[in-house]
Length: 430
Image (cartoon, rainbow, N blue to C red):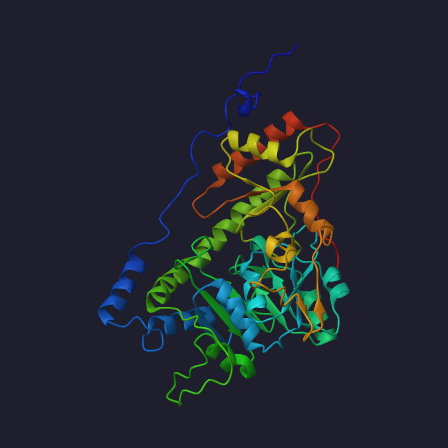
């Protein structure tokens, strides 16, 4: 019987790990942020409407994208809520979005008394499927939230065509997709209104914060007012004409965000380069399905989804993930935290958004009675079972990427059934 050496034996079984060094890290915040923060403190003004940093941040971000209007706010979750408020989507309406997203996409939907409907995904890109969305559109549909998942653009050509065909506005959720190219355009510049997050874990951050952008002058005022209790801050008499929360961004957040904008292009370029190398390496491993990148797009690397081809391995995703971690490669099984499509969360399964009522899922006034069931989005559910995530950021280098590929190849060889060809995954056509 052949005896495996320690390099061939999996680390989880006592072999030598592929990588023993920790992944590189670096400082995300430094002298630039300190300088602008000191200017805010010296100004003795933290309120956005009377200060200068939030205004400068808005102008900088708007200019980066070539957009007309930008409003800073307190979080990416707030940004999606503001977008819905700016569009004045009527209460009781349905809003279609992806079954694979963060709860931040949905909080504002529920607070605006809207009913979320969840579309299935393309199994290659993990973005929302235009075909699934079109099947769900009905007379109650008043908005579509397109989530650019993991740093990869959704099929905006198809979604823009659906928007025009049915007269339904598009919100682009770009929380994970900074400067993400899509056929000569950036995510966030194509829909009616777009939202971004400055959460600590995004490409750039100010602790917590967000932006909303639009080119539509007829919704710009409502967008700006929805940030700030429907209060005019231009000298007009205070007299709110619709209900709006307080989602103000502070001058401290604006200062950090402004400094971060100077770094975002370099960050994205580095991640794109490393993700390309990662995808090319993984595509050579039998049974491993890399994250598909459609023609004309770039993956900007918020995280990277890897799929185990069904029937190719003797272990499930959890075991594969643990073995990969033992080889010195951090990863997360089941795509995202929570490990399930969002409609399987308790808040939707129990229809428990608000205490003591099933509203807005059930309402006699609105004529709603919506339930969410396991099996609603089979591609999304299967993806959670068969995928794990890798993170490659701007502090990594080519050696890190090559170690990831070698480790995945080692685990795949150990657990493979020897029946799978090498694959390069391609997205479905709309």
